[in-house]
Length: 254
Image 1 (tube, helix red, strand yellow):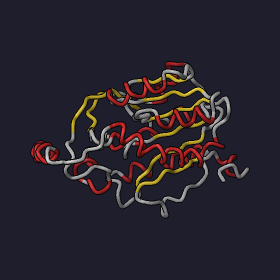
Image 2 (cartoon, one colour; image 1 turned 120 degrees about the vertical axis):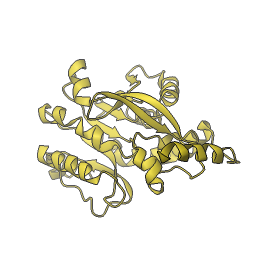
Image 3 (spheres, helix red, strand yellow; image 1 turned 180 degrees about the vertical axis):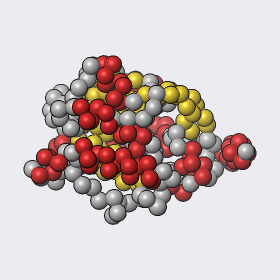
């Protein structure tokens, strides 16, 4: 019962915010972060590989990747209409990109996503992060939170429908919901002949409200054939590389 009241208070507070960032400002501020990420992972993406970009947002990750790997095919998922429309416009010059107006999860369903208009990088379906654990998100206390209904599917169902049986690299950035995205990929990963590199945003045990579910998915990935990851020393929010165990043995993650 308290959540609508908290939303009302934040809407009122947002009116007093003297310097909200525009979308163009956010893109300019975030570009250097994306380029630094790409420096780290570029060598793990084959020149003619298939990449899945989950939480594509306004397309910065895919745009940066295609400048460095122009031969890759990218399958993007972005459920927030505003971000999806911007991504379509930004990436329309790349015929090898498809952008789907939906998100990924471990269930096929419609559900709300919570939007921070000044910061599209903080959009999340995790209401317990957006509201109850705001210190873990990038959302200011005076931010107006907006609700939007979105459609979610699973990667395993999508890939089966589209006849995709192999991909090379998967990036997920869904503000705390990545465990559910990965959970919805497990059936696909168990059947594919080649495990892709997974680059995913995870939250530390002390900060994720659904740590047990996240840990269960991580354990499943290790059982499938991914190399060990050190979750104990990770930062509050960290981008984690899951490499197939044979790639780890070859030292390809360095």
